[in-house]
Figure 1 (tube, rainbow, N blue to C red):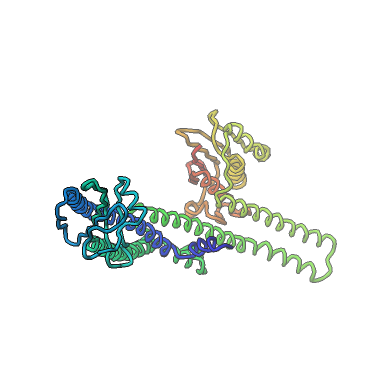
Figure 2: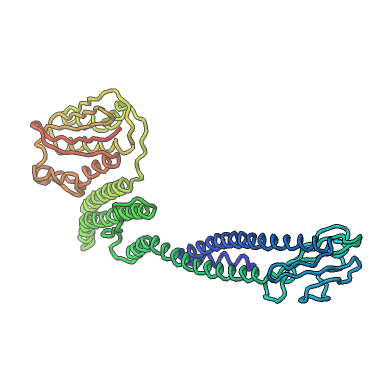
Amino acid sequence: MTRSGRLPARFQRLPVAARLMLAVALAMSLVLAGAAGLVYWRVEAALDGQLDEDLATYQQSLDRAVGTGAGLPTGPDGSLHQVLASDGRVLRSSDTVRDQLLLTPAEREAVARGATVRRDIGALLPITDGTLRLRAERVTSDGQTRIVVAAVQRGHRDEALRELLAQLALASGLTLLAASYVGYRTARAALRPVERYRSGAATLANSADGAQDLRLEVPTDRDDEITRLGHTLNRMLDRLAASAAREHQFIADASHELRTPLTLMRAELDVALHRPRTAEELTDTLRSVDTEVRRLITLANALLDLEQLGSGEGIQRTETGLGHLLDDACAPYRTAAERDGRTLTVEHDRATVHVDPRWLEPAIGTLLDNALRHGSGAIRLQAETHDGRLRLSVTDQGPGFPPDFLPHAFDRFSRAEASRTTPGTGLGLALVAAVAASHNGTAHAENTPHGATVTLDIPC
C-alpha cells in the first residue's frame, strides 16, 4: 500500500471526535490562511503605495535638477541617488553607495533607450541590511544623456511587514488552537448521547435477561438527529424485548404442555415393557400413544402458528370476497353440525375485504369448532363491514363462558374446565386473538342471554 493510501486508513481509525477536530482544524487553517493573506496583501499594498509615491516624487525632483543643471535636492529620510553617464560612469552619487553601481548593464542599456526601470534590492526575509527600492529614468542635460537613479530604503516597510507576519502567525496559531479545542469539546458533547447509547447497547449485549428492562434515556423536549437515533434504538429494543418475551413464552409453553403427553407416553411404554403383553394389550397401548402423538402434533402446530403470527411476518393481505371467505371457512363444519342435528347459518354483506384468508379462515374455523364442541343449539356466523372495518362474530346457544374465565379467555393454555370438559390444547382462542392482532384488530368474548359470542373486529 502506498503512503497516500495508508494515511486515509489511519485517519479512519481515529475516534470520531478526533476526526471532527482535525476537520475543524483543517477548515480553520484554510480560513485563517486566507484571512491572513488578505490582511498582509492589503497592508503591503498600502506600504508599497506610500513608498512608491515618495520614490516618484523624489525621482521627479532629481530629474528636474539634472535636466536644468541645478544642485540635487535632498530627498526623504534614507533616500539615495546616483547619476550615470550613458557609458556607465558614475557622475554623482550619494555617499552611502559612492561608486557602487545600482543598475546592471542590461538595466542601464534599457534606461538609455528610454525605458523606466523599477527594482528592489534585498529581500524581506531573511533580514539583511541595505534593502532598497530604486527607480531609474533617462534625462537629457545640455544635449547629453544622463541616467538618473533614485532609491529609498525599505527598512521601515520591511520591518512593519515582518512584524505583521509575526502577529498574524501568533494570532492564527492561537485562533487555530482555540477553534480545535472548541471543536473537540463540541464534538465530544454532541457524541456523548451516542456513547451513552453505545454503553446501553453493550449492557444489553452483556446482560443475561436480554432487553426486557433496558430503555435508553432520550430527551423528550428535543427533536434533533441524536434524539431521533435514541428513539429508533428504543423502538429496536422494544422489538428485541418482544422477541425475547415471545421466545421465553414459547419455551415455557412448549415445556409446560409437552411434559404431560410425553410423560403419559413414557408411562404407557414402561407399563407395556414391564412384562409380556398380549396383542390386544399392545394394540391398546399403541392407540393410546397414537392419541398422545396426535395431541403433540396439534400442540406443536398451534405453537408454531402463534410464534409466526407474533413475529409480525406472517400476514399478507389480499382482496378477498367476504362470501367466498366465509363459505370456505364453514365448509368443513357443516357436516358435523348436521350430524349433531344443529344448524349453521351464515349472514354477511356482499363486500370485498382486504385481509389474509390464509390466517383468517382457520381462526373462523377455530370459533366454529369451539361452538360445535362446547356449545349447543344453532350456530350463527355473522360478518359485516362498516367504515373500513370487518366485524365478524360466532354465536352459539350453549351455557356460555364461566364469568371468571372471560378475562382470561384468550390467554394461552387457558381452559374453562368448569363447563367445557372436552380435551384441547387451550390455544384455540389464543390463536384467534393472535390473528386479530396481526391484522391490527381485536378479539372479544362475551356471554349473551342465549349463549356465548366471540367477535373479531379488524380493519379491512
